[in-house]
Image (tube, rainbow, N blue to C red; front, side):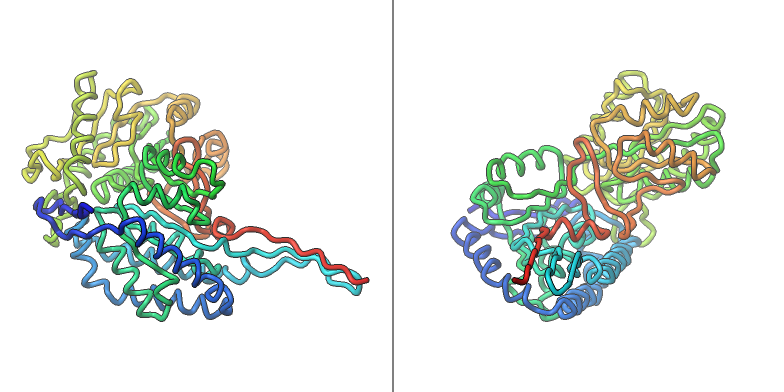
Length: 460
């Protein structure tokens, strides 16, 4: 079988390559996971929690080695590489802290005549198909509750971050989680789809593109295998007339540009009330011009290359399309000499944009954002909802009730007020429309990796 190559965006070299499993070897790996699952689920909950937390601790111990690996694999500057571990630990700690409450049976009646209660039972073998943009953060959203709930995990990481999957397996195994309980595998698309179609898994969690999600759904058609799909996004920010402009600029532009714009809930379009528009745009341009595009191994770099040349091409094409239709670019690419026409891409702010332009309607997943002037909440709501996606929306106002009222009308999974590009593990991470289905984290994250089981016991 053809090896899977990881091409580093830093210099275009082959960073690593791995041979994918053939179908028989892949089926054997999944069979081992299934055989190991009952014994893992039979362990006390406290023991599973302790082992999972130990695995996260082992992963964190590798931080100094992992940070430059992330830079090489997907281009994130080493300046920010360690930040992912804060999120990993916060999510793992929170999910561990609510495990007992989320998984303890709910007793309806316990009398001398009846014992009636509800339990949450592990699904069995969970298949996690993880993305490259936050290769540890996104994967653990399902891995942590999945293992704690008593499932076994088969992880297939993105080809752009093959080493991340290996690091996760190494850490969990070093902590004492059995090798068959947590497996990292390298698979091509054909074998992946065959395993899903043959009903080898009890739950499939996929984070990636809309087209990738459609391929997963097609593969699972007729199997009744439950799916968790976090797909595309085009998350909006809305700056109302009562917003703090400085705070809005700082947060929204960071949300648009951090990780070279390659964030699931990154800000991709901004609507600003006409009374603040000029001030917002001026400050936004100053903010972006303060970035430094360059080699991610340089500690002064704040904007690394995009993870792949083809991803950068999508963004360049969207920018060119917008300009051809009348949009005005505000960032001089000459201020970013590292832009090489390939993976290294200068950031861009576009004004005079509208929804006839793909940059305002289709996922960019890169360092570009369009800014539109609006005259009312109604106009902003119409534009925010004019999208096939719905992951998060960021509303800037000084009033809780206003934010909640507007949030009730936005078609999205999470409503932020004066925040953006953030994930709270106590709240469910979910989306609507083409962004996908299902949810992770919070107590509902345990519902995704378990099924309800009812007991109605009667004495005669």
